[in-house]
Every structure is written in structure tokens, then in C-alpha cells.
Length: 491
Image 1: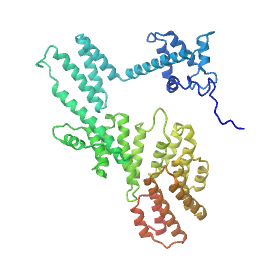
Image 2: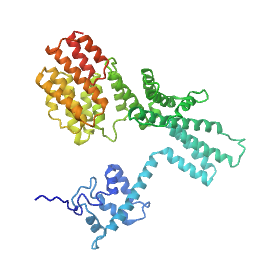
Image 3: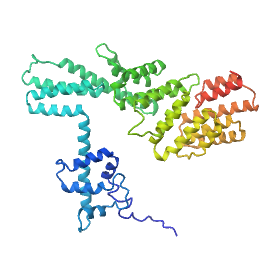
Image 4: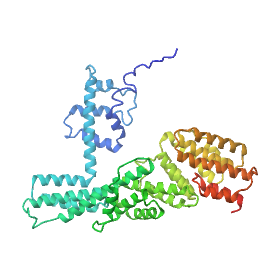
């Protein structure tokens, strides 16, 4: 009889508290370089606990994944304290101390890499201690670092205003009436720049969420904010203009004029923003272009590809040598739609190893199937699709979409009607698919079936009327569908 009650995990198994601890989870994500630096940090005077250093040395033997069968609390304890009775509290204490030390190391390392923040902290220290010219010397270097950094976002203006406030305070101690030194006008301007940058940024995120995720926020103050931005008193620049047009693209200015102006601004000003900010801006462009591409009257595929290519160049869709399956597929499909087949082929080979291992083969095979289909090698496309294992809804949508087109092209009525019927049931029954996706794929199926019937003689030709319907519908795969209709009507 099968055992119905799960037994408690054995010590040292997957349930081991050390193996699943926050400490081990953190050590796993350290890079090789970070592990080396952390080892030196642990053995430096910054760590007064010799016991913690020895504990780290024990754990180091199980780097990088801590998957060794011998990695257990008892094993580590026995190595640390030979001959002593095991105590879980001691292991927990050491793990807690080492975790705190690891977080200190992260803060120290991040601060050292952020030279501006590091310089500001030293400047503030000199200001508190009042060591005379040391403060002014360091403040001058801090300003130089700020100016050398190309970014001109809210962080820049915040740090600049804080630095100038410290300088104003330094001089005010001996010049309270500000006769010798007064930077108040600069600080007012910098404060406005920081405030407008920060507010436009957060409102931009809010209206984007309201547009795509049915969120409801109180944005009553957005209108007066936009009026302040447009007033003559405010000094507008490229960074605030980007933020302004992002908001317009999600509100009352959702049109091609706003879209192309934002695209132009980002081409000119990408160095002025952080990667996180740029990602948000390009997502706004990406989403708008996608919506426009669903209208067959808009041939926007080259622009879609340009956006995807630019995001790739700026490192916005790759992180630490990795890329998600969604962004891989998205970039690849944009290249296919724009007829950039050489780019698409090279993209598969150049970025396949960045994909998650569990999804890599599926993504690569469906991409190669798309490429083979575009080159009209339908047999090869079917061979690639036969290797795909469905891991999620999007896999099924993409593969079924390709099957429909392939069997249309190969003029296989039995297979064509089987897959279209199966696809319809899937769209109807799958609860994770929203109404918009069901509509765009449903339109694709209905119109493709009608065109297939026209080609086979099952229905009378209705080219002009059908073309009008297709041109006025949102369809996933509209470019291909119109090509098939044009082949029948001779256009």
C-alpha cells in the first residue's frame, strides 16, 4: 500500500535549514569575483569574529551551488567544533552573523562603485567636522563627478541640490546674510528640476498602469503639473520632455505624432537616463507600436524592429548574460516581420545560450520553425514544431498559429480544419487568455478559414468585401493573411 502521509525530511536533505537559509540563497547569487572579494572581506579586520571566518571557510567548500550530498548542518558543525555535541543554535548564530557580514560587504561594494554617493558621504562628514578647506576641496570633486556623469535625471538634480545646500550651509556659518556667497537661485532651479522630474516620472508610471492594467489612481493633480511644465518660468530640457511625451502617449496624446517625437527624443537623449528609466520609455513605444501593427493599414514593422534592436543595443532586455524567453521571442518576431532574416538567424545563435535552460529548446525550435516558414520550407518548419513541448499558454498560441499558416500553405484541408477547430476550442476554454488576445487570434482564425474556403472553391470569391473587413479588424498575423488574400484576388 502506498504511503499517504509524507514523512519529515531527513536532516541534510532538501529540508535542511542551512541549505534553504537566506545566507546560502545569497551566496548562490554571488558571482565568482564577488565570492573572491567577500572571502577577503571576511578575513579582514572589518570582521572581528574569527568564528564567522572559519564558518565561511567551511561553506566555501560547497560553492557554487551547495548541492553536495554532504552539505548538512551536522557536517559543518563537526568541522567547526570537532568532538562537540551538535547544536543547531550555534549554526543559526553563525549563519546570521555571516549574513549580516555579507550584506555589509554588498553595501560597501555598491558604495565604492557609486563614486558620486561615496564622495557625497565624505563631503557630509567634512561638513560636520568643519575641517576648513577639506570640505571645499571635496565638494569641488563631488561637483566634478556629478558633471562628468552623463545622466540628467531626478537623481542628478537631487544630488546637485543637496551638495549646493551643504555648500550654502558651510558659508552661512560666517556669512549669515549671504553677502559674500549666495547660491539660492541655483538651488531653487535644481529643486524644481528634481520635483518635476520625480513627479512626471511617477505619474508616467501611473497613467501607463491605468491604460494597460485597468488600475484606478487619483491623478487630479496631473493637469496642474503639466501646466507648470509648460509654463515659461520652468526651464524645460530633453529629460523632462521625454517624461512629458511618455505621459502624453498614455493619455490625451496617444497618436503617431507623440510616438515619433518620443522616439526621436530617446535617440538623442538615451545617455541622460538610467537603464531602468530607459526600459520604461521604450516599453511605452513598444506597446504603442504593437497596437498599431494589429491594424493591417499600418505598415509599422520596420519601426517595431528598430525599437527592439535599440533595446537590445542598450542592454535593456539582457541582464548578467541572460534573456527571458518572452524578450527573446519578441525581438526575433520583430526581425521576422521586418524581413530581417539574416539578423533573425544570427540572433538565435548569438543569444540562445542566454535563455533559461528549461525553456531553451522550446524557444529555439519555435524560432527556427518561424524562420523556416518565412523561407517557405514548410516541411522543415513542421520538423522543428514536432520537437516543441508546451510549457505555457504562449507556447500553445504561437505554435498553433504557425500550424494554421503551414497547413494553409501546404494546402492540407484535413490538417487545416483539424488545427483551426482545435485552436478555436483552446481559445474558448483557456481561462488565462484575456479577451483582447482571444479577439486578435479569433479574428485570425475566422478570416483565414474564409480565405482557405475561397481558395478551395467552397465559398464564392469575396475579395473586396473581405479585404475591407480585414483592414478594419485587429488580427494577429494580418500581414500574412492579406498576402494570401492578395494572391487570390491578383492584387
